[in-house]
Length: 330
Ligand code: TXA
Ligand code: MG
Image (cartoon, rainbow, N blue to C red; front, top):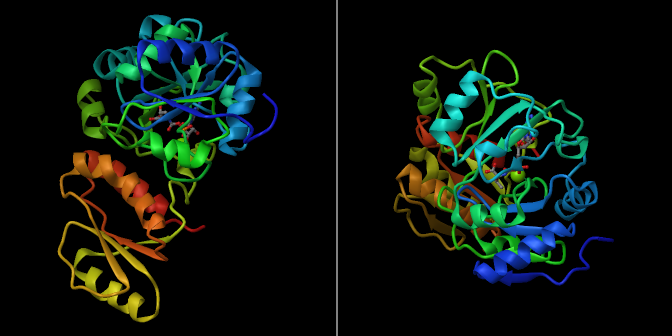
């Protein structure tokens, strides 16, 4: 592959023929975007450095950021990780295939391109049927970051991938809307003290129950792109506002000639400069539509988006985490 934006991008329904075609593209070093239960991934052969380099270029991502390596099943782990500690085995049995990534000491089949030079590797075994079919047809490991331009909101529909990566990827397998809607929970097991690096649909409460012990406080790694202060951000400024101040804050901004989007499950008084983007108040449904809603803010050409944080329990922690990053300093 030569430069960015020079490819014909095909959107394909995930038929057996399309899966076979996508696997062939991956085997010759091409890029394929595919649905997972969390968000769409931008897949490249993890063992082909040229393919991984093309993937970084398509995303516009700095090459020292590690990417998650995806496998079809845990019985393929052996040469990809140095070892799976006992607590890792418990988590793998409980939550794989599913929305969980384990950071482990890397094995011999993992190169520095995918770890960004780290001695650890993030491994995920997704349960989406299209991701599973593609991984099985391909047969190896797929390096797959979220299928969005670096720093932007992850893609939860094939349309979102096409908006950002047309010309940078050969095939987008269209599996409809992602079920979870937020990126996987990342758990670091590379030291004795497991720690959640990124909250997700496998919740802290579930991990603590599986391990039968409380977890250390969240650890922040500067190398985790999802832990940069501003990430998962739309173009509009995002402000976090307490629910009882939403209407007033929207008025104040709108009176100041700002075009305001209010993301809320509440009814708001009408104002010509304010658009309401209705959010469900159930956390599972909210997670599913959150990124599409943030994209809508930009599609509606709003300057500012106002949103309230959910209660920080269970999946609410992951939603709050992504909203804080969307609202982070740019
Ligand atoms: O749900 C997901 O995890 C999606 C789907 C496609 O699987 N993938 C995803 O990948 O969100 P990405 O590259 O956008 O985010 C992966 C995060 C990054 O923040 C990266 O820094 C972190 O995982 N990561 C990967 N390997 C790591 C490692 N060895 N140590 C610490 N963090 C790591
Ligand atoms: Mg990402």
